Image (cartoon, rainbow, N blue to C red; front, side):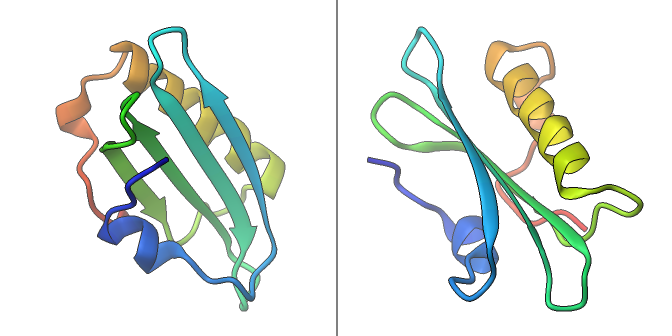
Length: 100
């Protein structure tokens, strides 16, 4: 079970349709990447990385991914989440907060 942080709850909006990608790595780390269109048509992205116990390691969301379709934003988000989770990108560059 994932323990969601404030970033996720700021992102959450049950009235907007979203697509999601869930993945579990061999060490038990789980990735949650979601993409949606805002009410104004902006492509928005959320990504979360969680320990085996469900604690958030990273949660980010992007209000707007300009010039990206939902599909392109999803690919970018999954690649970023994997890179952060595997150490290819340092976690200190991924704060537990909202991104513009």
